[in-house]
Length: 214
Ligand code: AP5
Ligand code: MG
Image 1 (tube, rainbow, N blue to C red):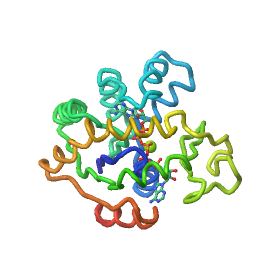
Image 2: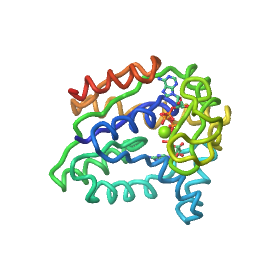
Image 3: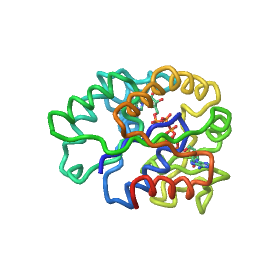
């Protein structure tokens, strides 16, 4: 099963993608997590990506597309995968389509997690992310058992650099301009499904499982 998660920054793509990946035994591929791991490891890609991420801008397509096209051809992707945060521009979607066509494959579902901008700004300040495994928490809605410690791996939880209110606003406007057009793109392909992302995360997950036929 090949799934794309669409939705604004903070809509809950990562939260849901992790649960889906676990349930279906497929890899969760988050370009944001890949860039953050590169920043942490001090790679050249990380240094380039950070310039854009810290401003709330998208990393250029030429640094992003090849990376994902390579990743989806790895052995663990044979049974499918869940893409979180990619594609997020029309050229990225076209690059993905071109790669899938060559492989004789196609996307099964593009799930749009719908959350209004007002809710997003409130959510982001409370998010905490694991520096090591990328797990995501919320100080109110999904608190870790021990403050600032990851339940999954025991590493430290931090507030992401791009979760400052002014950067969140920029990310939202970039989303509306460059990523929202993908909803139309995947609607035309007949694979779009919408879920209400404002409800409890377990209920969002149940709605997604229903769409996926589980
Ligand atoms: P990325 O890491 O993809 O960030 P994003 O799209 O901005 O989305 P987030 O990860 O912030 O939110 P999410 O939807 O995953 O929500 P989450 O589950 O964490 O990208 C970061 C940056 O990298 C980009 O700005 C860009 O610069 C660059 N980048 C990445 N991919 C790129 C690409 N393809 N092209 C170019 N540049 C790229 O949830 C948010 C919070 O809400 C959490 O605290 C969570 O616990 C809580 N929450 C979740 N669900 C609920 C719920 N139902 N109720 C209450 N709280 C909830
Ligand atoms: Mg995320």
